[in-house]
Image (cartoon, rainbow, N blue to C red; front, side):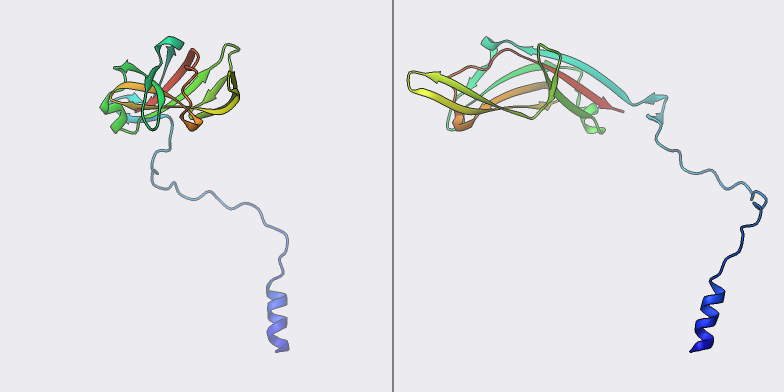
Length: 160
């Protein structure tokens, strides 16, 4: 057992490192890394920005058991080709002070009416299809007494 321990002890010792050896031969060309372009016909990654504004009076109430407000915009730039080829759509709510909040977004509100104070959550989100984009406002307990305020949105579409 002692000879085995001695071999392990002396075999694991290291001395000073020697000088760097000569450079080896050049290896084969590797796969290209991500550089923001897909390399097909010179077309690369695109990022487009659009602004949409829904006036308070334009929100449409979709009434029923699960009532909410919506507004739909035509969006011809959002094609099925963009969506089907890895396109990403991101939306933000823009406030008057320049701040942006990413959707989906939940805010908390207090409304006072003849029945007293009503507290509710306001959930803002969006959906899209080729040629259109919709923005939605759904309140907790499907509270629809107050029409949503005017809202401005920035939409970023990224695709190849």
